[in-house]
Image 1: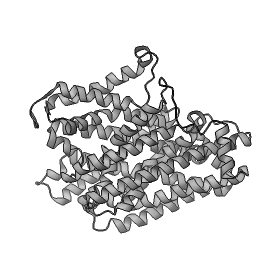
Image 2: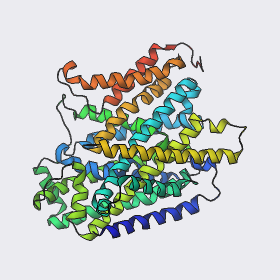
Image 3: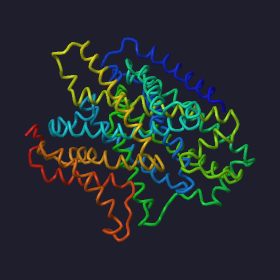
Image 4: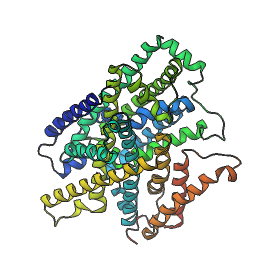
Length: 488
């Protein structure tokens, strides 16, 4: 496929996003930017969240991982469903009852400023790293298959893409993103379905024959029953549940869209519908991954160095120009939801949680808007640096790296919220940062030496649960009988 055509597709897609932003950002205020004035439609949020949750990681890493892990990623997906139910019926009622703009305000009302600032800071780090690696995955493909041939430096690629995203999120924030995510989810799912049909036709097999071929090669294996394995089904399901609770339920980016829905009932409906749809979509991505490997074998194509490169290599180098075009559209659709929502959420959290923008009654609305815009630009610059760092140091499967990072950075958030909800005790705010920094360090040591300490047992994505438990226990040690210690 011509690099010029790829560039044209990206630019055309971006123009559509700008048009949407123009109409949705009219009359926008800070309240519009942060939570869309609580006027978002639940079905639009549910549909758009599919694209946000999948991102480029699912688009390439899930199909690529089938070669080694087969369909065992479905174990994690089953856990996702359980996690979404916890979010819908435990966390969402809490957020709506307190009428939160930032979900980390709960920590302030429950424990005081120390826990509040610590929780918000861990979110900022978590989302910056997690979203950066997702964006890197997509941009790296565009760089390798198109821009390297034009001698465009990777930092320039990142700068241009982030500048494009700033243009359509700068004013409208969440209100704009709810609509752009809907468009992007549509194109991503269309790309998935069309690619499956194209490869099926290339292999000249029916869907039943494709499944039989996948089964014969062992790709359809879902459950890993080896208790010592990182992929053991029990810990994968439990890990998936807690990954969802933290990366969605305790994540400002994901929750600011949900709490932008008018009522709790509609928001819960959004979460349930979204979670059930996500199971089917992930299963289809795994099926795509399986038939990609069948295609490699059938056409005697050399195995790409990294699993994440399997899909782009086949789509851009071996399939028809139509398939390549579909892939690029899907890829770009995976890119923008990973970036726009993250930049907006980090801006919202920093303004509200760190700067206390909503409490600054001595500032005019104009000054608050200007501060928010400066923060928005600063967040985009932080993404620029982080993505370039991943380009330099990243190796291996991005989805594994993403979930591993989440285990270490979201664990303290899990511990803080769990202690607040499950316990009636207060805590010494001054020691909260110490506990929340020590917990990932201890978890890392346990992960590193797990085979020696636990009779050959290998820790996988359950590092998140272990990290959260250590945080919970640490908070118990510094707690007392006061329900809310404030800043004591």
